Image 1 (spheres, rainbow, N blue to C red):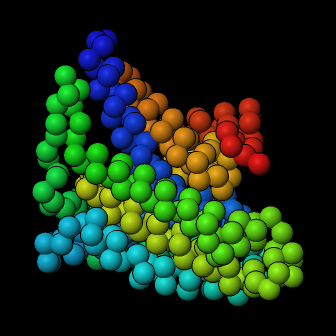
Image 2 (image 1 turned 120 degrees about the vertical axis):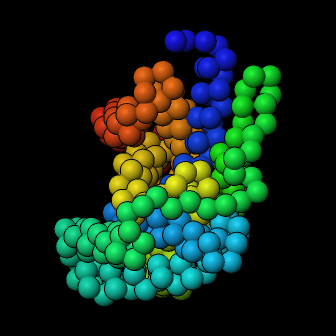
Length: 290
């Protein structure tokens, strides 16, 4: 049943969800959008970040978002290792198109199965002071479990935007996506730059995973829910555009919230794939594509 109050709550929830989706998609926007590496395993690193937050929260009572921040160097190193393996086995030989894709699929299932064997398939959740609390603004409820991840997602977006635009390595990452040989002539190693970018992308995914488990409980197979969302946002926003990623995330979040509120949550997962198909058909370059 339609009501203006219900619509207002759905819109606010969608905006907050969009901020969280921005955090989820920043890593794949960097890896797929700029480096042109179809890292299908990206959602697995998202869930790996969720379980890292769960373990530290359960064992030591550490705040999940603080855990995500503290673990970013570890996940950055993991990303560096993954890219080096990928480069040495596939990209260097020019076999990244199909065999590299299979490599990431295999990595996705290895992480998912390993988590299932270790922690089972029961939903895991965390405890934090802001989980379960909300504020009411004239009939519009704002849940802290959505507000906090949204704010962190916006902060991540700003940091990555400034990094890419204001630092040497950030500009080098932008350059390697356009002309690797020209970058080499400027004295920078494209493989080294790609390694840094891939590591940052995985670290961003792990931090987003810590945000995810504050919003809702997770299981190892939760990663499958985010494959379509990540790539839909990256394509819709414009491959590698950080501002475009933010706008596309908000669009997807609002549409999902409206669909879930008025037509049922079962429609929400179909929205991302529908948007991806429409974006590819109408504007393949995305909203802010170059």
